[in-house]
Length: 479
Image (cartoon, rainbow, N blue to C red; front, top):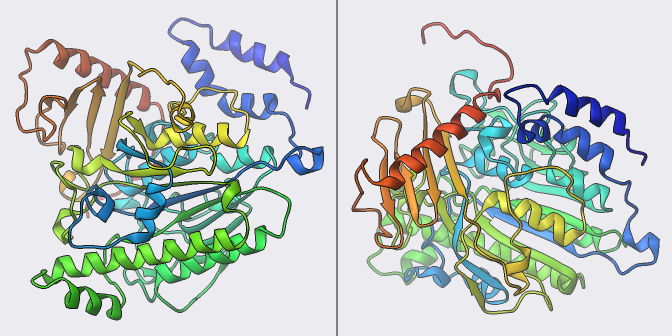
């Protein structure tokens, strides 16, 4: 494709006025540069080259850092995920981009901080409780992979928009089989606020069965079908489990109560829901092997945020849980498996965020990336190569209604230092994660790192303030 350099030069001149930075230009022209500079790609098989790797990205919902047997849980058995983790590289310091759902998903699919693409909080059905709108200018991962020759699919939970133009097929996915909304009020009737958000592409559907079983089977169907093609595929498999309601199949709950004597009913329900999830993931991985594609597939597994303590989640040794900025709300399990590429049984202490999976997948899949993003690829680390630690600021944000009053609260990290507030009504507290990993002994405001992190956070908030997080200006009077 011919690049219209005159258009880019014009934008450079426009952005060269006082107060505008190179970062401003790159942000403003991200879509244009990606469109102009990205060559039209032909599937590798059509060029006579070896077929590119398939990519399966599995994201689960609200899984606590300590809620896998391989991550220390003593009252549950997750053999399939344990086997997957043992087959590649496990990360011990991997972070979700937010302690709640939508923002992390926005970062995963854009490689940006969520508030820089219009999603500082959870996207919901009703305007009064909605805190995000995915920016139309954001370039999503499937769009880049399609240009590199991939067939792209999402199975399961979308949670980045309920209406046009922010539905999966409109944002780069060739195939969508799943749920548009935020959470299901029931794992069997698949409704939210009485609304059916289940879709096959743009068609409303009414399938029967537990959502976890449905998503697993739909993923199996997709893998089986795509294995017949010479075209590489990208499958984003996003489960609802183990998000509330904690509703495991009855036979799974009975099994846990029989096996784990003395376990509380609350904890038994969550354990059963997670073990049922593990079983479904095992079936998907088995289908991948049976299709003959497992040796040519990069599989990544992680969670969108930490476990919810009020329903019995276990975040291991970490302080806090879902919704909060302590480690238990944002540090999550993560592993990557790529046969003959990633060393089985390897581990990394590298600090990485969900948004880093975007460039990692692009690099692994040979998809060009010609504009600036916030995420950093961890592919060198995965491949066992030297990757120096980056000295940079990392940010987390959540905006929420209800008791939060529509306010945002934040965390910022630099090296071992972390400045956070666990709600918008609490003061910022400074911690050294190396000396105080459980975040129990805050340093005072007079510490030199407090002002350094405070200033960086302020600048990030100013930058994000230019990005709208509601679709239209609205006026909500009274209640």
